[in-house]
Image (cartoon, rainbow, N blue to C red; front, side):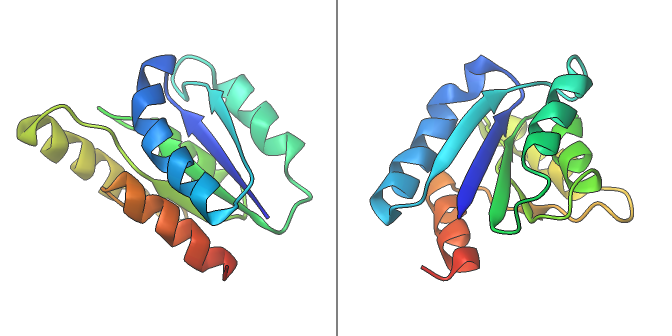
Length: 128
C-alpha cells in the first residue's frame, strides 16, 4: 500500500503536511511530489509511469484554481485519485471545490475538502 501525493507547487506543502501527519498516524506509506499539470505534464506522467504496475496505490492531488492536476492524474492512471484542494478563504474554497468537482468524462476524481478526512478516506480505501 502506498499513497502518492502530487502537489501543483511546493507552496501546497503546508496543506499536504496535514494529510501526511494523519497518514503517518495510520501507518500508511506515502511519497510526495511537486509537479504542475499545466507547467510540468511530463513530470506528472513520469510519476504515474513509475507506479503503473502497482495495484495498491492511491493518488492524492493538491491543486487549486483550475485544478487540471486532479483530472490529469485520474485520466492517466487506473488507481483511485482523491483531490484535496487547498484554499485560503471561503471565496477561494468555492473556486477550488468547483474546479475539482467539474471533471470531464472518464476522469473520476473523488473530492475531499478536509485534509484529515482525505487521509481517513485513504485508510478506508486500503481497509486498514
